[in-house]
Length: 237
Image (tube, rainbow, N blue to C red):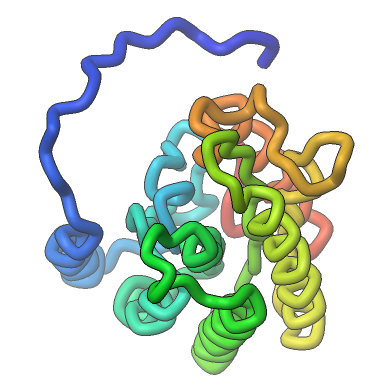
C-alpha cells in the first residue's frame, strides 16, 4: 500500500467512554459465541492498539471467528485478570497478546506522587505477561506474545525514556516467550526508525496508535511469524 486512502472523519463526539464499559459488551459477546457453539480461531487481546485494529479487514480465520478483545487504556494487570473470561473460555486455537504500553505511561504522570520508577514498571509488565502465557499454556492455547510498540510523542518529555524502557521490556518478553514455548512477534523491529527505538513518524498520526500503514506492517509480521512457527489459525484477508 503506497498511499493512505481519503476517509470521511466525523470528529469527536465529546462522550467519555471508560474502558470498563467494554466489559458488558464483551460479556454479552462471549455468551453469544459460547451459546451458539461458534468456533474461535484467534483472540487478540490488549489495549487500544488492538481495540482499534480492524481485524476483519486484515485477517480471516481458517475454521471460525477472529475475535477482538482489546480495550482502550488497558494495562497488563487487567489483561491478566480478564484473560480467562475473554480468551480461555472461548477455546481459541491462538491467543495474540499485545499489552504494556499504557503501563509505561506512568513515567508521564503529571502528579509526581503517581509516577513510578522504570524498573518497577518493567517488572510489572514482565510478571503479568508471563502469568498470562502460563494461563494460556495450562489451557493448551498457543500464545503469540507481541512486542510493545515504540512511540513518537513529541509533546512528551519522557518519550525517549519510555522508548528505552520499551526496548528493555521487549528483550525480556522475547526471552520469556522462547522459554515458555510461545511465539514472539517482533512488531517493534519493523516500526522503528534509524535509532532502533522511536516509532517512524509516518506510521501514526498521534505518535502512539498506528494508522492503516502501520497495521499493514503488523499484519504482515504477525502472519509471517505464525507461518514460521507452523501456526495456521488465521490467514490474510
